[in-house]
Image 1: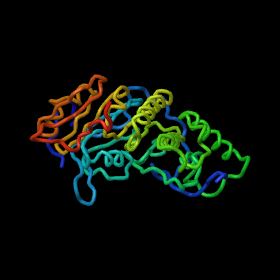
Image 2 (image 1 turned 60 degrees about the vertical axis):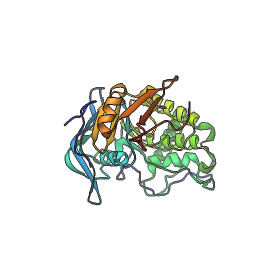
Image 3 (image 1 turned 180 degrees about the vertical axis):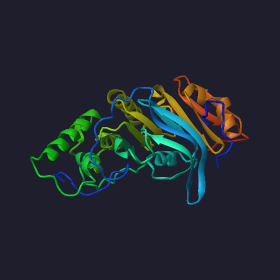
Image 4 (image 1 turned 180 degrees about the horizontal axis):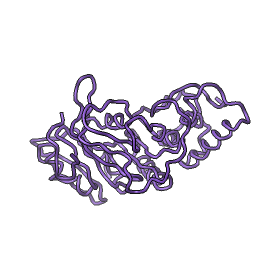
Length: 313
């Protein structure tokens, strides 16, 4: 059952290169894949129909239907605890889908994880962490390979070239050889995005990449993701609490609540009528003089966990 705006489901409950053996976040060890073959803009990247997910025997969400097309920039919004992160993990096959049907890049979840870049939730690196940014990026390429590549081999050259390419792509060359713990929050996030991009993914899953960043870094990282999306032709699904930094770039919004899910263009989803129906309580959607959205509940029905802006304009 595919939900659109206004239609709400009712059932939702070091100085050296590092070659340590660390599995990639997105799944099983595999060789870096070739770029996707001719994915057109109408091709489905993610398709879910009537799906449910459970953790520890508890239903996290149910009757979720959505479609993300190739090259789209999609935000996943909603209050805490409704399963936004679980949605990304279900797409990766890390959380089982217990009902409904799902296709990810034309296959069952997990089958094509090598073509997915995944940036999970994180905390900032401790200032004492000495691993270099370039080594963090490299783990996205060969962190699941056994052994150390011999200097001068094709594998070593290919790895080095690709790592440098994505470091340049995210604008991190000036600090990539600095210990990651000595980089700012925005610099760390750029390097982690480079790690997620290093295998040339067709789908990029980003779980709260703007969290804990100041407003300037949020704006910068949002613009970077948009630039990467356009230049690399990659579809992006991004979990966020505050939609405002990414609002100018979005094609679609997925809004999860305990009462259901709605998907559509931002101007159709983030409305008083739609959100009031989702939350079962009166909601107002306001715009300030700069065009930033503010979502509020009435005084007698406060909505504590909606995504208001983190900083005043």
